[in-house]
Image (cartoon, rainbow, N blue to C red; front, side, top):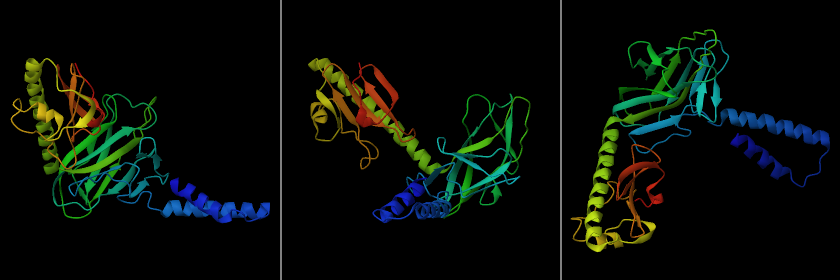
Length: 309
């Protein structure tokens, strides 16, 4: 739709100030609409890598509607749902994604799925074939469970060669039962290096240890001084910053985020309360907050660190 609006704006600018009759304007508008639809259809809206999450050469993910191709068994077509960024069909279908260039190695193949429209019968399972570069990752058709609240996730370890990889998901069964409607939908697809995932877990564990060390140092500091080092606004913790200057003798060494070029720890304090915060890698949009009474995970970034009791 962005391409559609862009085309209309472009044509409007070009025609501004030109006096034309109503029939001419109507013909031009119809031409612009057809051209816009053609541009939209060929603009790469669903091209591989159109809107991926690509943090490095060892991870790739994309919303479900950014598929390479999609075909239904009855040629009824696939449907893209913008608010869910998913793709689904009312009959069995095959949807294909293509990753960006990836390094060879062991990856976790994951896709999130849900049922669009209607209520599934108890115990229902989607029968799905999942292929990576033409090879069935399970060696057979798998049953994707639907118990509890969706969306649900499928994941399996796979070996990925250098370069682009093609992921094909085929929904095979469509058991319509009274009072239920089955519409299998793919919300997202991803390939994440198991090595990268392990490193992320180690980094998050280090963040938890570091914030615990800051808590211990601040507890010793307040026991001697009666107040915590004051810092009324949230600021990054730096090696020569006010927090580290105050904690000399209470903390053996400066503790920085495991990714110091990309992330920082943050600190704020009114003297009676404080917060030390870190951004998690493994959980997007989640920060770890540490205060006098303990630690907690909350939505938001470390730069939004809050005062804790």
